Amino acid sequence: EDKVVQSPLSLVVHEGDTVTLNCSYEVTNFRSLLWYKQEKKAPTFLFMLTSSGIEKKSGRLSSILDKKELSSILNITATQTGDSAIYLCAVGTSGSRLTFGEGTQLTVNP
Amino acid sequence: DVKVTQSSRYLVKRTGEKVFLECVQDMDHENMFWYRQDPGLGLRLIYFSYDVKMKEKGDIPEGYSVSREKKERFSLILESASTNQTSMYLCASSSRGGPSTDTQYFGPGTRLTVL
Image (tube, rainbow over all chains, first blue to last red; front, side):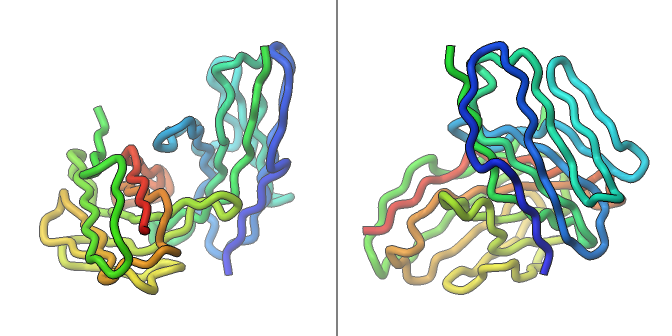
């Protein structure tokens, strides 16, 4: 059975802090790893990492895939209150399915 | 711009009622998915479809059925709603191909309460 585990499950920081969210996986037929941000509605896509693209960066957010360790991290620097959300990690396997982790609830206080 | 819409944002039904949740995507995607999201459990896949009239069970299909008569529309049916089906239901779609097509695009969700 495919499994994705995220840690921590929740995190409270102050504005300006840097945070690192973790995602580890045990799946058969790994194809991709995706990060989503979910505020009080639908998850929105952040990054996709694959064997041919193991690092992505967009503004204050960056992510790295470690295929040897079967894990990924999502870094957010200089956090803002608007970064408060649930961050979901998902792993793509054969057949276009995604297996999701539980999510990390990030709260950024002013 | 990518768009997935769901028929209702909030829905309240009574135990035993038949419930229809509709999802429409305008991206000409082959794949469509239904998930439910519960605190502490994350997103769990109920059913998915690779093509019109095709359906596959996900991880928690019990108590649900689906219908895909047109490429852009994927319906989730609760034949006889029960209180343990109170949840947030999310629809998603993606195109078919290699790993670069794995990104799923989500609708706004339907929060269903079964009394």
